[in-house]
Image 1 (tube, rainbow, N blue to C red):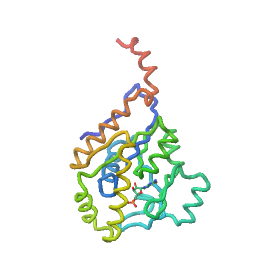
Image 2 (cartoon, helix red, strand yellow):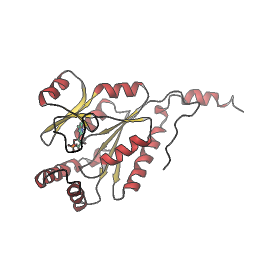
Image 3 (tube, helix red, strand yellow):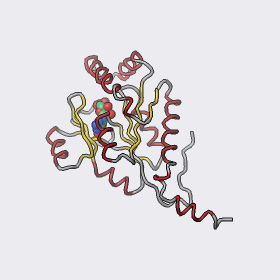
Image 4 (spheres, protein in one colour):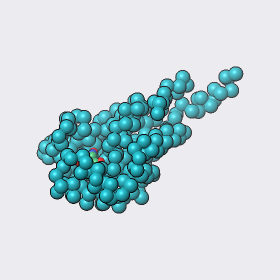
Length: 218
Ligand code: 5GP
């Protein structure tokens, strides 16, 4: 898959979109999201704050900003979070400032957040939000993927599966649903959604001037 070049000479302005991707843990949402951000220069990843302790291999500021509960609650009280929710006993939230800065710069923002967060962002920015739900091909497949990651104990994995069941109950609130049976196919589906949504007239404020100028070009 080649990386699309957005730099068209007439494309002087663009209105960013907010791509909200949810799924049960282990369905491949994080890999799909990170690949999209790596391939598209106009898309940035929202890095969440969380009170969950880092897993092995996770780095401050790359996967999350790791906070104490007091520090997280102070951020929420100061209005620094665009949304936040409790997931499995930990708090997770989206820092507001990077999203505002990205939108002002005409960039797109990808959010790897749960159904509660996706719902809050979509309520705040209904015209800019696009919601995508990623489903696993089956429950045994999901359990296998969580065990294969070997990041968590069996008890935690069982908790994550139960949580995943509750997450899946919200699949029908999303604009698009991808079944991640095959990563490349699922990634291709995600690109199609993203590129189609980018072509909506409201996201391309340069269009009226472009259309007006069409007659001038021989
Ligand atoms: P994990 O602990 O596995 O990294 O994430 C647990 C869940 O929290 C996942 O469903 C993930 O998408 C969600 N999550 C991560 N960041 C945020 C956030 O900023 N807000 C909300 N609402 N959920 C988040």
